[in-house]
Image (cartoon, rainbow, N blue to C red; front, side, top):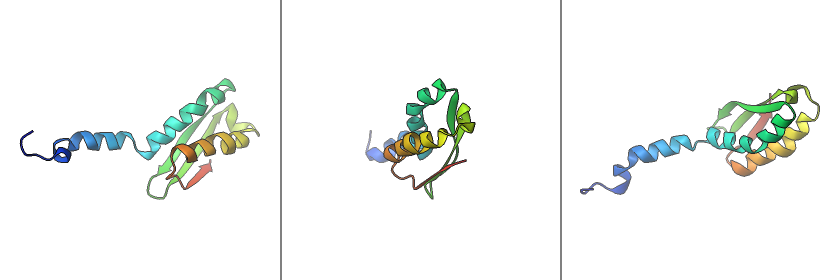
Length: 96
């Protein structure tokens, strides 16, 4: 490695890893945990907006979940709770 410090030698790899583990990616991974239940009822959820600076996330309920009155319960008890646990820097989660 010559005399190049570790961080400099691997800066490209470190940068690539940090980009792939951004807030939006972690939110998507959290949503993947509840998607099977949503899809079983003909619905889904998607991230509409993710502002890493403010920590604000907008989630849209899709398919059957979009018009279902119970989707608000799913949103609050499953999606919002899971996202807050998995991605603690999220400050505000809004259903759109």
